[in-house]
Length: 301
Image (tube, rainbow, N blue to C red; front, side, top):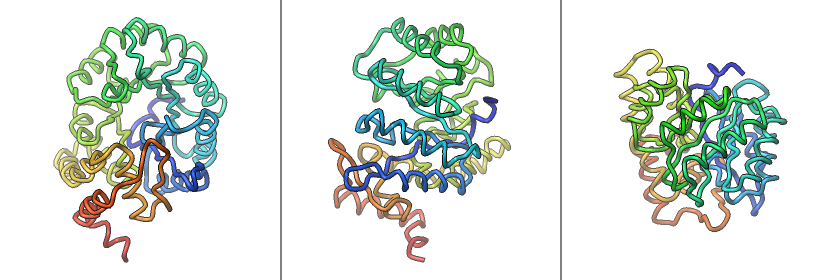
């Protein structure tokens, strides 16, 4: 694909459950909701989708549903990483066959591999397909970081390595990557509160959980930065602050799923163990956030 299409707000969709099973119909409706709200793409099976609770077959079917419902209107990015090389191979191969536009592959979590292991791992996977692919850099969950030297080795070893989702509080690393690889290197923001500042220094877009709730505002934030409307972008950044913070009042996506149910975006805020729905205390706290954002009144109307 033309990697210039990989930009803007590409929210990582939650996985709706009903009675313990994945609700694929509701998932397809979420894809339509994102497109109607102007999102520039959708991300399937990111952290917000609770992928550790899904089987390979369920993750693959979610990719199929997203590709079918998007029908080429927006790019579909498939997150295909796992702690297991064999699972990552299976997920990546399926996404490539199904017609995903790009892959996002998380650094293998729990094992804490050395940098040389990361390089070999990613280049091994890259040889299996010719899709644009990106590293999902989330050291807070994966317990491993990537270095600039590792990124350079991946760039040298794979012509279709095009970027990363950066979910770390490190703006300096973003600048180092863009300086090394040029402005076309695709860096997506993975931490909500850094959306505006990271885009202001060159990130091409957002892959933020809060996009499940207010996709229109994230679209406008991207467009403000592209238009060099710094005051407008900062105003949106300020308006999003409390909602961005609310995403992490508990483990993501517990708060997000409750707020989505509260606003009628999904029918249930069901999770699979060991995740659990919001407590009554957390619900009251999130209701306050939604009320101050003026969203509960819109639901009532």
